[in-house]
Length: 253
Image 1: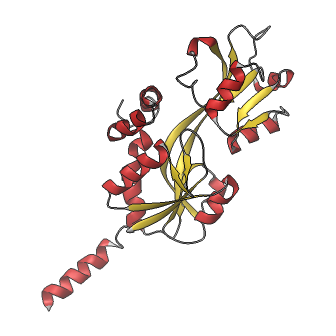
Image 2 (image 1 turned 60 degrees about the vertical axis):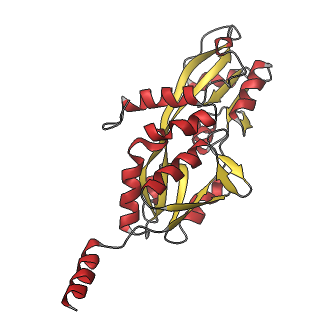
Image 3 (image 1 turned 90 degrees about the vertical axis):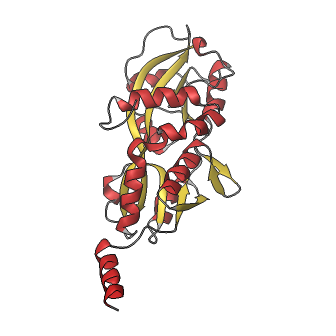
């Protein structure tokens, strides 16, 4: 009896155990986050699931429109949002447990297509612009008064740029493998950001701590490389892993 009581007391001091399953919400962001029959797939989802499983946590994915991701996540404990922008205003209902990936938004053009250099966002309005749609892009371009054609798929955006459907493309991803990278130039970098994993604030502290440990290198840990190779994004993985390690202490290049 004394031994049993001691074990119960020790378990109480240790705090709640990590949740067996997390319900994870996200909005498709091809090719990094894909919809899979109401759930989520792609390298972001596969890498996060791998990291969570290593901590003894299962995940169940739910695909929802971008505007509903944080709303659904904040309803109850053991819910998380995958790949969302950091929002200090949501700290009362959400705990931002760790960055999933860096996002470098840049402006691209076909080589030789611009009659003169462009150096800032205010000058984009002189040309037709296509942009990978997302909250960060909307904030930057609409604030600057730049009209643009929203795009739901990065690869489609690159093909439309190659076909001269617009003069400039705002994207966080390089050209797809079927297009020659030499045909395009980076005009300038628009912003450097991060996408995060955020969980409902009432989620067990042990679960949040486990996710923080898992996300030390985000979706770009050494163990996740086969996932990126499977999706034919190994060069993207290597570039992000190399560049991100230079700005995140403790990361491994």
